[in-house]
Length: 276
Image (cartoon, rainbow, N blue to C red; front, side, top):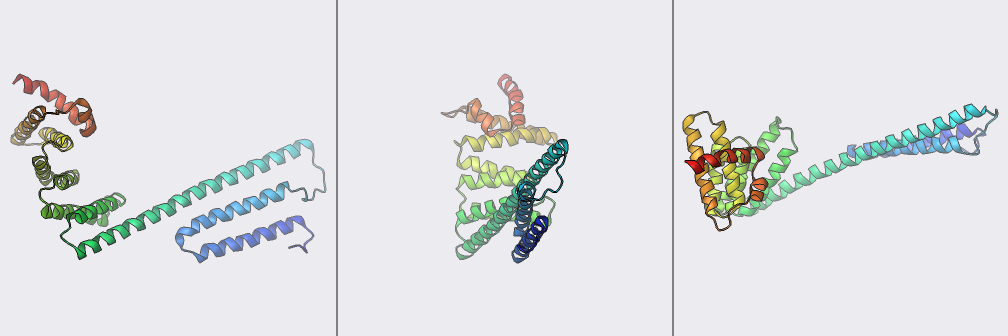
């Protein structure tokens, strides 16, 4: 490099050496470090170009006109800024990609560890609950139409069902199972699980208000008139029971644990229940 008399030739040689270094770094590691390698390559190349363009050692045989010199300087600054901004965007994307990969790997490891713990002690209901939570988290990161996502969804439900079998008096397990089943389209079994959670913990406003939301929703979306009346009666009975509690739910509780649409349905039903 130092034997070359041309400044720009030396700059090009340096950039070629940096290119070979970055390409070697990229090929040496796995796929998820290739994007950071490209970001490093682009940053170093732009740094060399920036240095070459503004270095005092750069030859200038012909003195350019003042206007041309200003335009050239502005172009160099604009190009440098654009390249640095592109490097920052690429680096940000590569970091997010790598973090996503590490997160997915950690989730897979967590599922594996929980499955191994259950294999060693299958009677631990808490392990089954945490396994269901891990399956649900993995399901949310998958495409909803993916076959693997459907398997994860079913595995999460089965794990929670096993937790309720091992600990049938644990209201939280029944509530979690009911929310999961109902949200995944298993409405009948989901409502049954939610009713069991309320029966085991009648003072937990969160469970009761979620079940009240489901009753109100089903009374509106059910196609059979008999089911509409049944869910309407259940909603009224649950609402009246909640009003008799020592700590009856306040508006803040309704807004916290009920969907706004379901709360609007409740406000329409309350006058009818009070007048009947």
